[in-house]
Length: 290
Image (cartoon, rainbow, N blue to C red):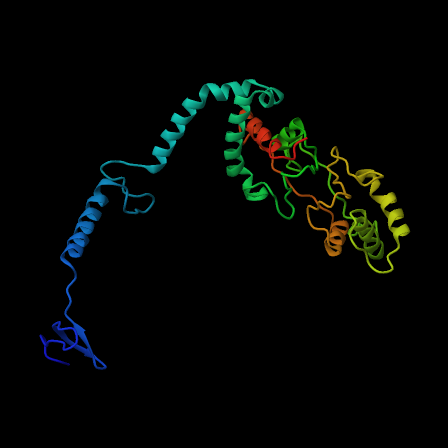
């Protein structure tokens, strides 16, 4: 240890008297403005404790003398916004889907409102840009399991698919392997046939004739003789190179073996009719609507 008050020969600053491994601590006080700011912050924190909600309690928190609530403020702002939108939203509610798309003012409002609703309710599955992911359809393309017209999209949003709603889309891909309808070698053969429909490579020695026969006997009832699908049954087009779960052989084999039955929730009852309407208009306007 060194004596307190020693002058450091390099910096010319007084030392504190502390030394570690030959390194001396300089006595350099904090700037006065910094110290004043620090204490002002402490004073403001104490005042804040009393004015605003701050301290957690057993089941709630202190309300503060001002009784401020960010949740209440947001509720007021939303209520004011709905007042501004009131007449326009009433107009949207009264207009048909077709009339909304014909009216530029209503269409612009529906798209703006629909985008917000989509982000709050649909983006977790379909993505913020509606590009989808494995098992969740891309809503930007022109490939639709249950139809891409404005009315069909509204129907799907309203009642969902396999959602438990009595009016929901119910058809699903059968589990041909689990039920023993097809043997493993037959599944491999028809999986390669399905890949060939999209121009994808197949296994060496693959029997195309056998694959076509298996497909005709088991798959055409839903996917059609030309394999272009059927929106009334939710059967996808197998020739357009658009795949919901993946186009590799293993994934197609898994689909044929175990089936598929993804669920689209029914939004009727969760969202009001006008909100469902604007969401249908927004999805239809993404670029893939028919």
